Image (cartoon, rainbow, N blue to C red; front, top):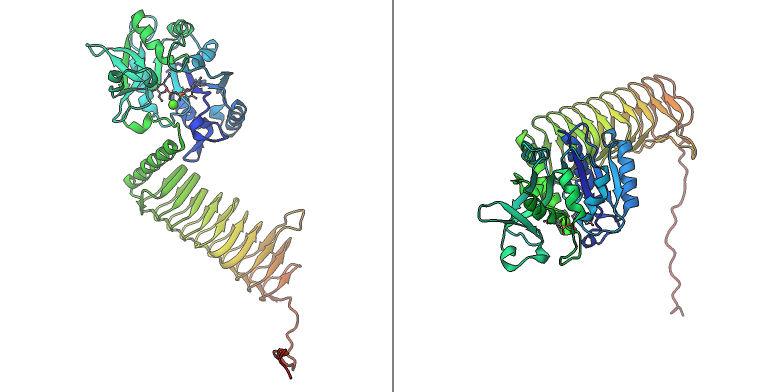
Length: 474
Ligand code: UD1
Ligand code: CA
């Protein structure tokens, strides 16, 4: 479907009490505006959404520039500046020169993040299909148990929409109407241009209300239609931290439910946070308090213990992640055991049946099958072979203060506890490093290499505690 899409995002969001513009506040780890833009571009391949910015424009611009680099789908996003925020009608007026008059215009709000593609497609279809040259006007409305704060939909005796009246301008009888304006609408663009130019500010807030175009459409005989979203959260706007927190919980609950439907065990669907895309195989277990960021894939039978943070990571079937483990940018093979209390950093690839235990940090390292680092170790910029045992307290000294260097540990190596490998260094296949070794030269394969001061035993007298001198001595 071809159309103009305008996202109103110039408002300040005073009630957020934040230095960050409201539309950049994160919901599920992503700015509100990104949610809206994502939906907007999903509507049509040729979509070139226009974002009306104003308050905090430099921040919003910087965000959009970064987004276009991160994700090419957003490259066609345009902005127009609304220097002073004089109302929603005034905001849309700023975008007018950029609109194609032959296409309908869809208006979205930067602070209403969860409207679905399906709902919007329905609204667009509803505006379409009139025999005249221009489309009809379609409004997304909602019946709310508590409509306070919203514009109310006023209908005539035949149930036809007459006008939208803002809460601040409403009489008691209008305030009693439960059907509200979500703000989201599809408009015939040529008529819209005419209507916007004739908006007045004679209202309680002294603003140019976009909602006033409804009465103008009635006067011009433009058909007005309405649709409702399937779920209330689709139309909820964010005006305060409280509403943002509420929406976050609703969205997370919805994501948890989707996992449950797929056969995932989510120990407590109220205590999981998915800030990105989590793809799970069958019989995955996720304990409480876990946070998933970016793209995470958990294959069948993966078990994640409580309070883990997993980001941009793939974990193959049957692996277990222990409590309080942090994994970022890693690939983990099947039947691995990671944690509890492990940290796997970007660039790490662990093959099948690798064990990484408590207080072990792995960074930018490849570890082959069945190798183990079970306690208190740092493996950085390393290539570790198969069946290697990394003893407790082992450290790859990868950084000389200026550059990073690689450590290579070949298959079947045994590294004794408290060993430092000063990179660049290589440990040959089947080598053993004695506990406490500081390895500064390559260790040959098959041999025991140890660097350690000789152990000596001498006769000595352990110091004894001195008697304190009593001041009361005679
Ligand atoms: C608006 C609607 C109201 C509706 C409600 C739904 C009007 C007059 N009122 O009220 O009928 O029930 O949304 O959430 O349209 N914005 C600008 N420039 C401005 C003013 C606002 O870009 O000068 C943007 C804001 O950033 C926001 C959106 O427009 O994304 C809505 O503005 P807001 O002030 O929140 O309108 P409401 O009072 O909520
Ligand atoms: Ca609002």
